[in-house]
Image 1 (cartoon, rainbow, N blue to C red):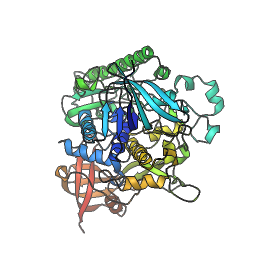
Image 2: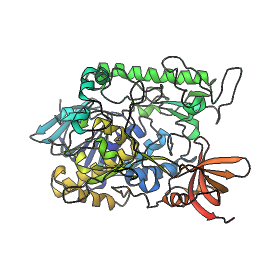
Image 3: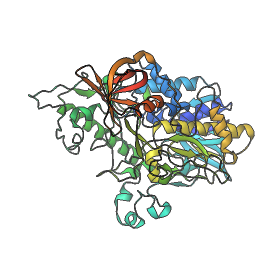
Image 4: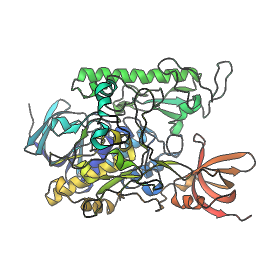
Length: 573
């Protein structure tokens, strides 16, 4: 029996990273907001899915908006800091991330959160979503809204709202994307039907018994060795050796995020079941994904002599099937809304050789349309060899980083449903572009922009698609708690990190002539040098020979690298 109608200004469906960001920002915009999540945790890939090594927007001037606020709060709450692995500049425990998000949600008087919901029906009145029906703990609720936001990982709201979307591959002939397959190949090769989206992963958490894997000849353990694991993981250690394969996603306290793409625990089979609306098939898929990840963890435990064991990372209240299994899969891709604009692969790539940024999205009068930016270096996950992608990386700060690119506001607005916005991976992109637009920092800020737009639309009594991007840009820039930049600036220095864990180092900085640097500390200590600070990069660009300097830096022995935060003094010789 349907209960009395609830009514809110903004309704957000889905517990994805962008969904919770949108709900928080809409409420901060002064409008009544309801967040509906299927699980009991909020954060999608940043917490419930256990992807706790964020990629992208790592340079300090790019740590803006809710991503920057989230990162600074992680640094404050993780006593050991965030430098623990080599896949990312940051690593944290899922419980820490989830507590931050729940604290933020609880602190917003205009925001109501209903966990444990099942989406039943989306009602339309012409081109508008008028209400959403959900099951909440066995109770049928119907909620009217002025603006609806899809904040889910797979675009759950789109088919029920009859909002046009894309799912699967697009041919090169459609938009001229350099890395897309031809129409003839898509039509003749069953691979493209069998793998409609990038392969997801069910993250499993391990726990290390000590900081380093010690050689053990009696067990045949060699930290740098490449042991053959049982099928289908035989080649998992081929590229990096045993120890680095395991510590790829190391987190505080010796937890290890197992989200290994090279013959590891990505799941490639029967993914159409995730979009079939058949709960039995979906449950079967989930059990297979979990078993696959557990098999991978067991294989690594065996070849490491028990150095890696299963780790307790997900409490019972997360809804996880076990303390070492994430509460949900890490979905890299799902349905992608057809928006008023879209991002294609060319929008991600450097404008010309030697230019380190993608083109800015402008309208016909030269006004910037961007509401968020990212820089991840396009990455696609499928079985078999790596999919060849147009390069979009450059050397900066002693390391590789991705070409920054922008997301126009029109990508968040449905082409045909006037009051529908997308806040997570379902915003309007091509399949090829999704490989760079799906990462945690960008999705946090896309969600923030969607929430800001929704609140603004309610306040000025317009539909979201009629808003000028400039109004959303101004709203984001003026936000008092999480001001957000909407286009990348390589030079603006913003140091937010805690100095309490920095080391002061006197050493010799040595360039290698290819954009890499190292630091000699004493006779025997040599570290690779990286930085996220424009002021340090500017100094490094003038270092053409070994130079003695006093530095402040964070130490990451698993990188391994020194992440330099400042150059205090250069010594003349």
